[in-house]
Length: 71
Image 1 (cartoon, rainbow, N blue to C red):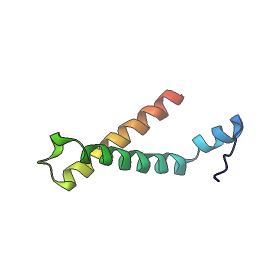
Image 2: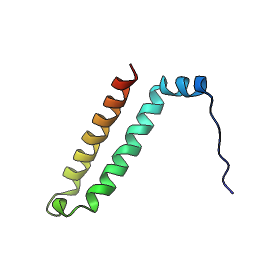
Image 3: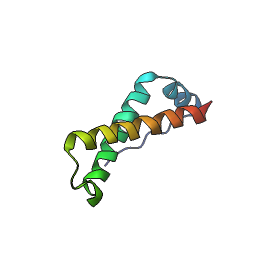
């Protein structure tokens, strides 16, 4: 069985102030975006490299927007 960890507000705030958190989040978002693109027929004629670049750009934009909204 998988255990859940409950975080208090100060733990979450310190995680959000850690640059490594945002880097990991950006990597996870890029992986998710790439997965979505692989299942999207509009990308059928696109190279893997182009899809990867699009996924990275989308992930970066998402994380930057999330950081901006924290302020």
